[in-house]
Image (tube, rainbow, N blue to C red; front, side, top):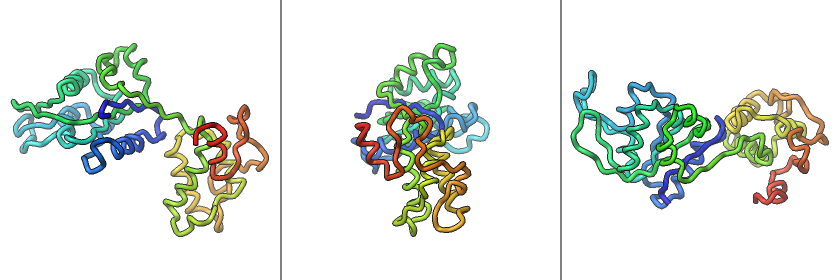
Length: 257
């Protein structure tokens, strides 16, 4: 389906990665464009021009015509990352483009037909933003056709070790055949709460590979206190303890594999 998707989750959970995965396996296929826009990183005064494009002379400094991100993504997918940061006046214009599947450049007189699948992502609770008057309810209805929430890493600890080993493969491919994580390191990773989620885990593994003293990654290389191998993670006390293996056993036991 090319219906809009709204991806929610804390910072660092991998919302853009999921958006790229959806695009890659969509009906359009990975040969079509994937365009990502971080709505929080662009000044509000420039955001309209970047999204919708502009014609020459539309404003001071517009010496050439430029297509917007919607045009660039035509036939493929447009990711509106941090969509909750959009100013209200721009939300109304975005809603019209989504409804009509047409866009008009700033300073232009011609509407351009679109065939764009929109994926929006945010770390905010948009229902609360609507209640506070900071986000349009009609735009939320338009974006929230297929909601997808990504849980924080602390709520899916069975993913920690498989992800850690995947990052080792990425940053140390010549050593990927070895299990570089000691038992103490595994337990320290499982006990940690990961406020920065997967992004923090990735950075921690990369740093540990650089700072390790020897072949194996110890708990001290992670900057975490060593934990006794028999101690279960605190947040998983009500569940079965997670073993320091590849994580597959825990996934199967919880019906996630």
